[in-house]
Image 1 (tube, rainbow, N blue to C red):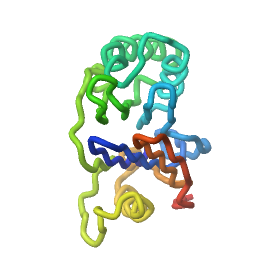
Image 2: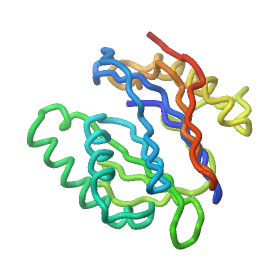
Image 3: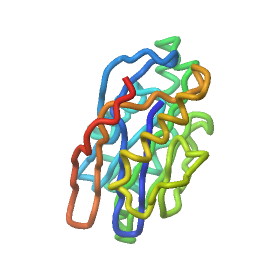
Image 4: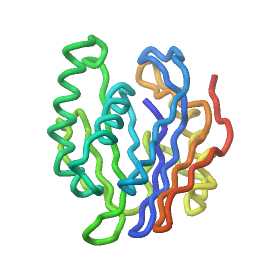
Amino acid sequence: MSSLLFYTSSEEAIVATDTLVAEQNGNTLGHSSKAIALPHLRLIIAATGAAALFNRWIGLVNEQSVAFDVDTLDTHAPLNLQMLWGEMQGQFPSPHHYTATLYHFGFSHNSGLIHAFAYRSESNFASERLRYGLGIKPDLENRGGIDFAAFPAVAPEIMRAQIKQEDLKASPKGVRIGGQVQITHLAPDGFSIYSMGSISSE
């Protein structure tokens, strides 16, 4: 699992992720990017849960030419994610014990506005349109003392609060969060991608 923070409005999408990759038992596997920009689609794809699905989905979306924006990709995503998930479960035993959620943030060709969607393995990857505003995964039970209006500047502070919360949970329920804070920002004039430093819990 991961920390995923995102803010969307009609004109921008800002996605913050950690980089730590861990097994379900909490053992560290390494680090990776968990949000990827696809400039030709004016799209950000992010994920929580099983990293293998995210990696395969990025490759498939980048290779195919059916979709040209976030909306057309949405029409193809549920069935293709179901197929990829089924293939993974047939090849490896571990996906049976994992969940995965994919997120798309991008500009609609028709409306010119940001649209955002989530696809959850627990819902058979049904398309879920996301409202504008701030999303926090895993959610914070105690939101006191954080100026959420200052996002993304407060992304490291939010992630440290998530780490503190999740460390109190018994393994494997707690989400492992750590490494670097990475920001991917999509606006009408393009992308900004940068790091905000380390919040490692290792």
